[in-house]
Length: 91
Image 1 (cartoon, one colour):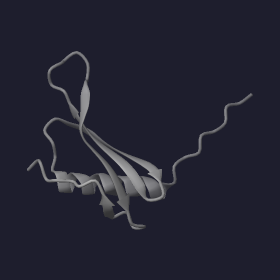
Image 2 (cartoon, one colour):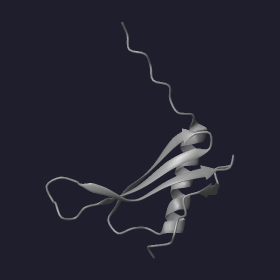
Image 3 (cartoon, helix red, strand yellow):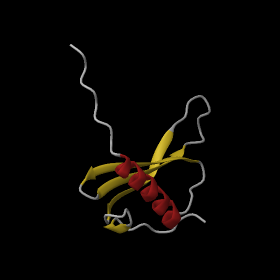
Image 4 (cartoon, helix red, strand yellow):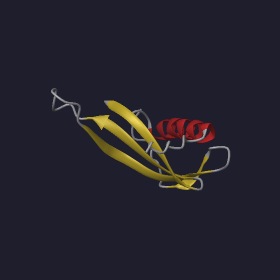
């Protein structure tokens, strides 16, 4: 039997998570050794945003850690409205 095709995430949500990533970095600042920022849609207008940085102690493999993780809500236009407080730490 053929495998079921996985439904693609709507373009609207991809644009919203990209905008959300930028908003988080604007508020937090850019951490040294930034690896990536992951935005995951959970339900409704709620998202989990994880900021990953590279651990510089190991050169053989890329090891990352998550020093900042946020549970955030956006309005229908993708702007932050509530959730975990984001404090400017970098820059």
